[in-house]
Image (cartoon, rainbow, N blue to C red; front, side, top):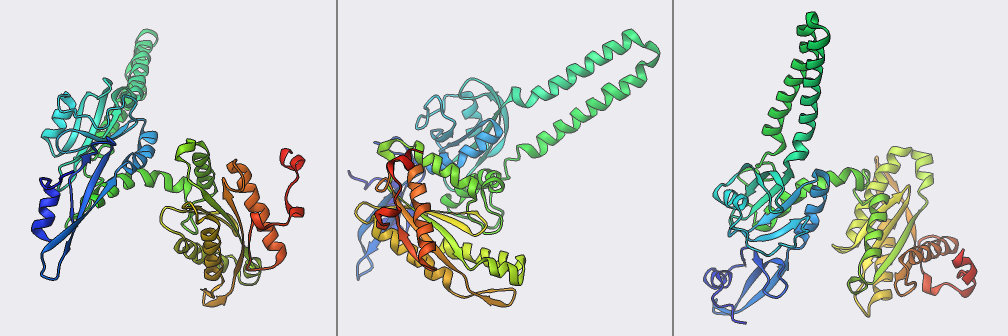
Length: 415
């Protein structure tokens, strides 16, 4: 494939610097992506090679799911030409298609930001707020069904009208008093709600970075989508003390792994972690000191795993880590990470001016190597953890290394 005519390639040759393309739709995958180009210079300063990397943007859809779920609407990303790069939900399967012939899309492409009311791409009347990303001209659009927004107002209006008619028929003498109480007050509330809706709910500038910051296109998209999506899920899924995922998030993540198609599943190492000697810290120095120690342990645990791995606090002094494994390096890598965690946690911690020491024990199980069912693999990791606790502190035990006498029988597993 010849890329000599591509804008990002020519820019890399001209500037001798790292270059990122506009949003593209992959020719083969039909998925949104961008291409990064890094020129490699020779001793004479001339370009001798250019390293290209395609970056898959399916994560845009993942970041949009929470917003679409909470609002009951749709979240879409268009490139500057009107092609859909990402959309959640997408029951029509229109990602990758040009929608420039749609009246709503034409209006969006004519303005930098704003709010419009028109039929959506699915034919449903929607109120859409949109904003333009810098550099590429891409558009982020959040659309909510008009009927969903106006339903409550319609119900209040109907109720007020019915009450007014009843008052006129039954108590003519008190009609003005009842109108003030039952109708006019509600109409003022509706007016205030409408003003709030137009001024705050669909603020198209909310996702943008404040001037004078001018981040790259990657940062703009991440900022816009994460601000809308992750803020909504942080309260429900983040452990407030350590900043790690909480038990609810851990269980939801396990459920997602279990529901993946077999061809998409990646081998997972399960590390169950239990702190050694933590309870005496709470007893001797108080819970505030214990909380500071737990926060530091959470930071250390996050530094011991790679980006893309999963770390969670299950409660109290119990933690869990899920590691994605490459073929051929499963047990070796999992045990190396477990020892790294033990060494990191065992280092002295300064909390409230006190030097405290906490250790940990770790049980390791592999999925699907140790069990085809993920739930069973989690039980194996828990069994290995308790074997490590019985053997002494600061130990890691793999389920595959447990003696036969410690393994469950067939009847026990069935139970």
